[in-house]
Amino acid sequence: MQSLRAIRRKIRAVRNLQKIMTAMKMVAAARLRRVQDRVVAGKPYTEKMRWLVETLAPHLPAVEHPLLQTRPVQKRGLVVVTGDKGLCGAYNGNIIRAAQAFLSQDGAAPFWLYCIGRKGHDFFARRGYPVVRYRPQLPVTAPFAQFKAIAEDIVQWFLSGEVDEVHVAYGEFVNALVQRPKIVSLLPIKTGETGDEERGTREAVREYIFEPQAPELLALLLPRYVEHQVYHILLESLASENAARMNAMSQAADNAEELIKQLTLQANKIRQWNITKELLEITTAVEAMRRARD
Image (cartoon, rainbow, N blue to C red; front, top):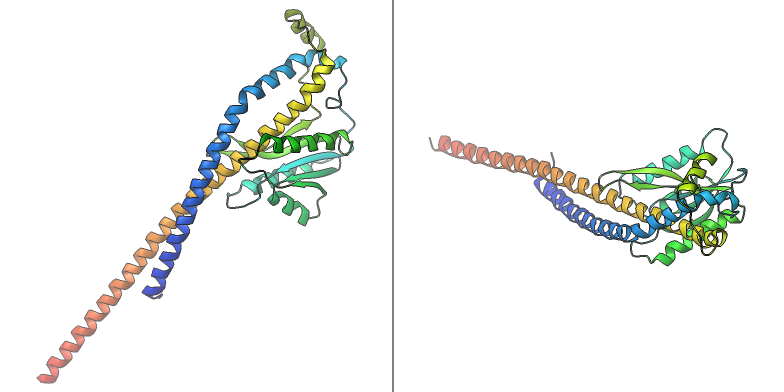
Protein backbone atom coordinates (compact mmCIF):
# COMPACT_ATOMS: atom_id res chain seq x y z
CA MET A 1 0.00 0.00 0.00
CA GLN A 2 1.28 3.45 -0.93
CA SER A 3 1.98 5.94 1.78
CA LEU A 4 -0.29 8.92 2.33
CA ARG A 5 2.56 11.27 1.46
CA ALA A 6 3.13 9.55 -1.92
CA ILE A 7 -0.57 9.76 -2.84
CA ARG A 8 -0.76 13.44 -1.91
CA ARG A 9 2.32 14.04 -4.06
CA LYS A 10 0.54 12.34 -6.97
CA ILE A 11 -2.55 14.49 -6.45
CA ARG A 12 -0.45 17.68 -6.60
CA ALA A 13 1.25 16.46 -9.79
CA VAL A 14 -2.08 15.63 -11.46
CA ARG A 15 -3.52 19.02 -10.43
CA ASN A 16 -0.56 20.79 -12.01
CA LEU A 17 -1.02 18.80 -15.22
CA GLN A 18 -4.72 19.61 -15.17
CA LYS A 19 -3.92 23.33 -15.04
CA ILE A 20 -1.64 22.96 -18.09
CA MET A 21 -4.32 21.02 -19.98
CA THR A 22 -6.95 23.65 -19.18
CA ALA A 23 -4.63 26.43 -20.34
CA MET A 24 -3.90 24.57 -23.61
CA LYS A 25 -7.63 24.08 -24.13
CA MET A 26 -8.25 27.82 -23.73
CA VAL A 27 -5.41 28.69 -26.12
CA ALA A 28 -6.73 26.25 -28.73
CA ALA A 29 -10.25 27.65 -28.37
CA ALA A 30 -8.96 31.21 -28.88
CA ARG A 31 -7.00 30.15 -31.98
CA LEU A 32 -10.03 28.31 -33.33
CA ARG A 33 -12.18 31.42 -33.01
CA ARG A 34 -9.51 33.47 -34.77
CA VAL A 35 -9.29 31.03 -37.68
CA GLN A 36 -13.07 30.90 -37.98
CA ASP A 37 -13.16 34.70 -38.16
CA ARG A 38 -10.67 34.61 -41.05
CA VAL A 39 -12.71 31.97 -42.87
CA VAL A 40 -15.89 34.03 -42.50
CA ALA A 41 -14.09 37.19 -43.66
CA GLY A 42 -12.77 35.51 -46.81
CA LYS A 43 -15.92 33.54 -47.66
CA PRO A 44 -17.62 36.21 -49.89
CA TYR A 45 -14.48 36.62 -52.00
CA THR A 46 -14.02 32.85 -52.34
CA GLU A 47 -17.66 32.35 -53.35
CA LYS A 48 -17.43 35.12 -55.94
CA MET A 49 -14.22 33.59 -57.32
CA ARG A 50 -15.93 30.21 -57.62
CA TRP A 51 -18.89 31.85 -59.34
CA LEU A 52 -16.60 33.48 -61.90
CA VAL A 53 -14.92 30.16 -62.73
CA GLU A 54 -18.29 28.45 -63.11
CA THR A 55 -19.53 31.32 -65.27
CA LEU A 56 -16.51 31.01 -67.56
CA ALA A 57 -16.79 27.20 -67.71
CA PRO A 58 -18.84 27.14 -70.96
CA HIS A 59 -16.05 29.07 -72.70
CA LEU A 60 -13.15 27.00 -71.38
CA PRO A 61 -12.94 24.34 -74.11
CA ALA A 62 -11.87 27.01 -76.60
CA VAL A 63 -9.24 28.35 -74.20
CA GLU A 64 -5.90 26.75 -73.48
CA HIS A 65 -4.47 27.45 -70.05
CA PRO A 66 -1.73 25.40 -68.32
CA LEU A 67 -3.77 25.04 -65.13
CA LEU A 68 -6.64 23.49 -67.07
CA GLN A 69 -4.66 21.04 -69.17
CA THR A 70 -5.13 17.38 -68.33
CA ARG A 71 -1.97 15.40 -69.06
CA PRO A 72 -1.31 11.64 -69.03
CA VAL A 73 -0.55 10.89 -65.37
CA GLN A 74 3.04 9.72 -65.05
CA LYS A 75 3.64 11.20 -61.59
CA ARG A 76 1.12 12.12 -58.94
CA GLY A 77 1.69 14.84 -56.40
CA LEU A 78 0.12 14.70 -52.96
CA VAL A 79 0.20 17.66 -50.58
CA VAL A 80 -0.14 16.35 -47.00
CA VAL A 81 -1.23 19.03 -44.52
CA THR A 82 -0.66 18.13 -40.85
CA GLY A 83 0.35 19.99 -37.72
CA ASP A 84 3.77 20.72 -36.29
CA LYS A 85 2.77 19.51 -32.83
CA GLY A 86 0.84 16.70 -31.24
CA LEU A 87 -1.56 16.67 -28.28
CA CYS A 88 -4.51 16.85 -30.67
CA GLY A 89 -5.88 13.33 -30.44
CA ALA A 90 -5.92 11.28 -33.65
CA TYR A 91 -5.99 14.34 -35.93
CA ASN A 92 -2.52 13.93 -37.50
CA GLY A 93 -2.71 10.14 -37.54
CA ASN A 94 -6.04 10.14 -39.40
CA ILE A 95 -4.67 12.39 -42.15
CA ILE A 96 -1.54 10.27 -42.51
CA ARG A 97 -3.58 7.06 -42.75
CA ALA A 98 -5.85 8.63 -45.38
CA ALA A 99 -2.79 9.72 -47.37
CA GLN A 100 -1.28 6.22 -47.17
CA ALA A 101 -4.53 4.67 -48.38
CA PHE A 102 -4.64 7.10 -51.30
CA LEU A 103 -1.02 6.41 -52.26
CA SER A 104 -1.46 2.63 -52.09
CA GLN A 105 -4.29 2.48 -54.61
CA ASP A 106 -3.89 -0.40 -57.06
CA GLY A 107 -2.62 0.59 -60.48
CA ALA A 108 -1.95 4.19 -59.50
CA ALA A 109 1.01 6.11 -60.92
CA PRO A 110 4.14 6.83 -58.84
CA PHE A 111 3.96 9.82 -56.54
CA TRP A 112 5.86 12.68 -54.93
CA LEU A 113 4.99 14.16 -51.54
CA TYR A 114 4.76 17.82 -50.57
CA CYS A 115 4.49 17.96 -46.77
CA ILE A 116 3.15 20.96 -44.89
CA GLY A 117 3.60 20.42 -41.16
CA ARG A 118 6.33 18.59 -39.25
CA LYS A 119 4.25 15.59 -38.13
CA GLY A 120 3.48 14.43 -41.64
CA HIS A 121 6.98 15.18 -42.89
CA ASP A 122 8.68 13.24 -40.09
CA PHE A 123 6.38 10.24 -40.54
CA PHE A 124 6.87 9.90 -44.29
CA ALA A 125 10.57 10.84 -44.32
CA ARG A 126 11.42 8.20 -41.69
CA ARG A 127 9.71 5.54 -43.77
CA GLY A 128 11.46 6.38 -47.00
CA TYR A 129 8.59 8.02 -48.87
CA PRO A 130 9.68 10.45 -51.64
CA VAL A 131 9.20 13.78 -49.85
CA VAL A 132 10.42 16.39 -52.34
CA ARG A 133 9.10 19.54 -50.69
CA TYR A 134 8.50 20.55 -47.08
CA ARG A 135 7.15 23.64 -45.33
CA PRO A 136 6.41 24.11 -41.64
CA GLN A 137 2.85 24.75 -40.61
CA LEU A 138 1.77 28.38 -40.82
CA PRO A 139 0.61 30.07 -37.61
CA VAL A 140 -2.95 31.25 -37.15
CA THR A 141 -1.84 34.88 -37.50
CA ALA A 142 0.15 34.36 -40.73
CA PRO A 143 -0.59 36.99 -43.39
CA PHE A 144 -2.19 36.02 -46.68
CA ALA A 145 1.15 36.51 -48.46
CA GLN A 146 2.54 33.40 -46.74
CA PHE A 147 -0.44 31.30 -47.85
CA LYS A 148 -0.04 32.73 -51.34
CA ALA A 149 3.64 31.72 -51.42
CA ILE A 150 2.69 28.10 -50.71
CA ALA A 151 0.02 28.18 -53.42
CA GLU A 152 2.49 29.60 -55.94
CA ASP A 153 4.99 26.89 -55.04
CA ILE A 154 2.36 24.18 -55.62
CA VAL A 155 1.34 25.75 -58.94
CA GLN A 156 4.99 25.88 -60.06
CA TRP A 157 5.38 22.25 -59.01
CA PHE A 158 2.57 21.36 -61.39
CA LEU A 159 3.55 23.68 -64.25
CA SER A 160 7.17 22.49 -64.21
CA GLY A 161 5.99 19.01 -65.18
CA GLU A 162 7.37 17.34 -62.04
CA VAL A 163 3.86 16.06 -61.38
CA ASP A 164 0.88 15.68 -63.70
CA GLU A 165 -1.81 16.11 -61.07
CA VAL A 166 -1.95 17.43 -57.51
CA HIS A 167 -4.18 16.26 -54.69
CA VAL A 168 -4.35 17.57 -51.13
CA ALA A 169 -4.85 15.53 -47.95
CA TYR A 170 -5.98 17.65 -45.02
CA GLY A 171 -8.34 17.76 -42.06
CA GLU A 172 -11.83 18.90 -43.04
CA PHE A 173 -13.47 21.08 -40.39
CA VAL A 174 -17.09 20.00 -39.96
CA ASN A 175 -17.68 21.59 -36.57
CA ALA A 176 -15.90 22.00 -33.26
CA LEU A 177 -16.55 18.35 -32.37
CA VAL A 178 -16.08 16.66 -35.77
CA GLN A 179 -12.99 16.81 -37.99
CA ARG A 180 -12.34 14.23 -40.67
CA PRO A 181 -9.54 13.55 -43.14
CA LYS A 182 -10.29 14.55 -46.72
CA ILE A 183 -8.46 14.28 -50.04
CA VAL A 184 -9.37 16.70 -52.83
CA SER A 185 -8.09 17.29 -56.35
CA LEU A 186 -6.39 20.66 -56.75
CA LEU A 187 -4.65 20.64 -60.15
CA PRO A 188 -5.47 20.59 -62.98
CA ILE A 189 -8.55 22.68 -62.23
CA LYS A 190 -11.77 20.79 -62.80
CA THR A 191 -14.31 23.06 -64.42
CA GLY A 192 -17.29 20.76 -63.90
CA GLU A 193 -18.00 21.02 -67.60
CA THR A 194 -21.36 19.67 -68.70
CA GLY A 195 -22.37 18.17 -72.04
CA ASP A 196 -22.53 20.23 -75.24
CA GLU A 197 -26.32 20.29 -75.32
CA GLU A 198 -26.70 21.49 -71.75
CA ARG A 199 -23.87 23.97 -72.19
CA GLY A 200 -25.49 25.39 -75.32
CA THR A 201 -28.78 25.77 -73.51
CA ARG A 202 -27.07 27.60 -70.64
CA GLU A 203 -25.27 29.94 -73.03
CA ALA A 204 -28.53 30.62 -74.88
CA VAL A 205 -30.17 31.63 -71.63
CA ARG A 206 -27.35 33.92 -70.50
CA GLU A 207 -24.64 35.50 -72.63
CA TYR A 208 -21.68 37.51 -71.26
CA ILE A 209 -19.36 39.98 -72.89
CA PHE A 210 -15.92 39.75 -71.27
CA GLU A 211 -13.52 42.63 -70.88
CA PRO A 212 -10.73 41.64 -71.14
CA GLN A 213 -11.35 38.60 -73.33
CA ALA A 214 -11.80 35.16 -71.76
CA PRO A 215 -8.17 34.00 -72.27
CA GLU A 216 -6.76 37.12 -70.61
CA LEU A 217 -9.34 36.97 -67.86
CA LEU A 218 -8.51 33.33 -67.15
CA ALA A 219 -4.79 34.13 -67.00
CA LEU A 220 -5.58 36.48 -64.12
CA LEU A 221 -8.40 34.51 -62.54
CA LEU A 222 -7.15 30.92 -62.37
CA PRO A 223 -3.93 31.54 -60.36
CA ARG A 224 -5.95 33.53 -57.84
CA TYR A 225 -8.55 30.79 -57.75
CA VAL A 226 -5.86 28.24 -56.81
CA GLU A 227 -4.41 30.65 -54.23
CA HIS A 228 -7.76 30.93 -52.47
CA GLN A 229 -8.39 27.20 -52.67
CA VAL A 230 -5.06 26.61 -50.91
CA TYR A 231 -5.79 29.45 -48.47
CA HIS A 232 -9.14 27.89 -47.57
CA ILE A 233 -7.64 24.39 -47.20
CA LEU A 234 -4.83 25.59 -44.91
CA LEU A 235 -7.20 27.66 -42.78
CA GLU A 236 -9.59 24.73 -42.49
CA SER A 237 -6.66 22.53 -41.44
CA LEU A 238 -5.71 25.02 -38.73
CA ALA A 239 -9.31 25.10 -37.53
CA SER A 240 -9.50 21.29 -37.48
CA GLU A 241 -6.23 20.94 -35.58
CA ASN A 242 -7.13 23.50 -32.93
CA ALA A 243 -10.62 22.02 -32.53
CA ALA A 244 -9.08 18.56 -32.12
CA ARG A 245 -6.57 19.89 -29.58
CA MET A 246 -9.31 21.71 -27.67
CA ASN A 247 -11.35 18.50 -27.46
CA ALA A 248 -8.33 16.39 -26.53
CA MET A 249 -7.29 18.77 -23.75
CA SER A 250 -10.86 18.99 -22.49
CA GLN A 251 -11.05 15.20 -22.29
CA ALA A 252 -7.62 15.04 -20.65
CA ALA A 253 -8.65 17.63 -18.04
CA ASP A 254 -11.80 15.64 -17.29
CA ASN A 255 -9.76 12.44 -16.95
CA ALA A 256 -7.38 14.27 -14.61
CA GLU A 257 -10.32 15.37 -12.46
CA GLU A 258 -11.55 11.78 -12.28
CA LEU A 259 -8.06 10.57 -11.35
CA ILE A 260 -7.85 13.23 -8.62
CA LYS A 261 -11.15 11.97 -7.17
CA GLN A 262 -9.87 8.39 -7.15
CA LEU A 263 -6.57 9.38 -5.52
CA THR A 264 -8.37 11.53 -2.96
CA LEU A 265 -10.65 8.61 -2.08
CA GLN A 266 -7.61 6.36 -1.76
CA ALA A 267 -5.86 8.92 0.46
CA ASN A 268 -8.92 9.22 2.68
CA LYS A 269 -9.08 5.46 3.06
CA ILE A 270 -5.42 5.32 4.04
CA ARG A 271 -5.89 8.19 6.49
CA GLN A 272 -8.93 6.47 7.96
CA TRP A 273 -6.97 3.22 8.24
CA ASN A 274 -4.09 5.04 10.00
CA ILE A 275 -6.47 6.68 12.46
CA THR A 276 -8.17 3.36 13.17
CA LYS A 277 -4.79 1.73 13.65
CA GLU A 278 -3.67 4.43 16.12
CA LEU A 279 -6.94 4.13 18.06
CA LEU A 280 -6.50 0.37 18.30
CA GLU A 281 -2.95 0.82 19.52
CA ILE A 282 -4.08 3.34 22.16
CA THR A 283 -6.96 1.10 23.25
CA THR A 284 -4.65 -1.91 23.48
CA ALA A 285 -2.10 0.06 25.50
CA VAL A 286 -4.77 1.33 27.92
CA GLU A 287 -6.14 -2.17 28.37
CA ALA A 288 -2.63 -3.52 29.02
CA MET A 289 -1.99 -0.82 31.65
CA ARG A 290 -5.31 -1.61 33.37
CA ARG A 291 -4.45 -5.31 33.55
CA ALA A 292 -0.97 -4.49 34.90
CA ARG A 293 -2.51 -2.48 37.75
CA ASP A 294 -4.95 -5.28 38.54
